[in-house]
Image 1 (cartoon, protein in one colour):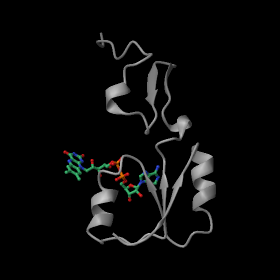
Image 2: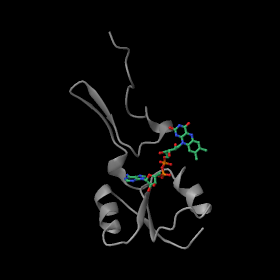
Image 3: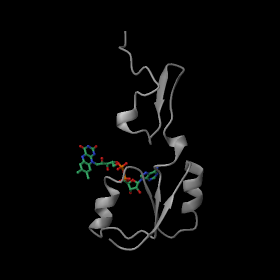
Length: 89
Ligand SMILES: Cc1cc2nc3c(=O)[nH]c(=O)nc-3n(C[C@H](O)[C@H](O)[C@H](O)COP(=O)(O)OP(=O)(O)OC[C@H]3O[C@@H](n4cnc5c(N)ncnc54)[C@H](O)[C@@H]3O)c2cc1C
């Protein structure tokens, strides 16, 4: 792994602000792909911005006949606070 600066972000806007002006910043969601890539030295980002604390990427809502699942929502927590999908007629 090469050296890089590690940042945490509290929101998508905070993440974008932290990436601004960095020559090669990478966002990290789950890290499943990014971390092995870094470990194998296949990438050399200047900065890694961890999206794990970005609450606005974790929301789940239902409106207008559609369910919207934030991209930061973890699979194990998908149905918490929500009745989940119903069988279509
Ligand atoms: C062992 C293994 C098995 C896998 N099996 C499968 C499988 O069966 N099916 C499948 O579909 N995939 C599979 N993958 C691929 C993996 O699931 C995908 O690459 C997935 O996108 C990784 O999600 P992550 O949240 O961990 O992404 P990360 O590793 O955090 O990020 C992946 C890339 O996306 C960028 N990125 C992350 N978030 C953002 C954002 N909000 N905006 C812009 N860029 C962003 C990162 O900078 C990085 O370049 C596998 C990967 C591994 C290592």
